[in-house]
Length: 73
Image (cartoon, rainbow, N blue to C red; front, top):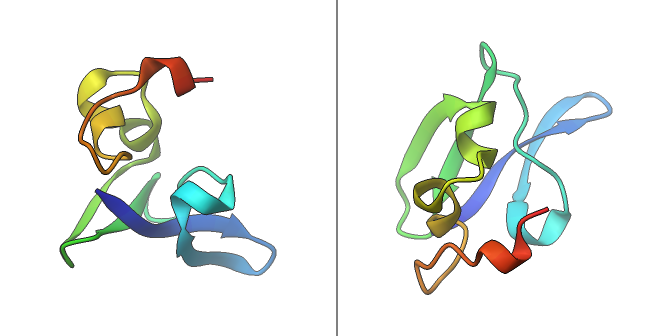
């Protein structure tokens, strides 16, 4: 499950709890963001990969590992 990630910030970007912040991951790192997971590992991927409307991408945002399409905007 995703815990923290880069978000756009007034002075560049910062790491915040993404699920609570209401922000999307930034595109700071060559069009991508670094994301830290609850188990401590970090992944880097293009911004669009983190926010795409697919079951595989959305499962990573929920502690029950289900995509919950009813919450997609």
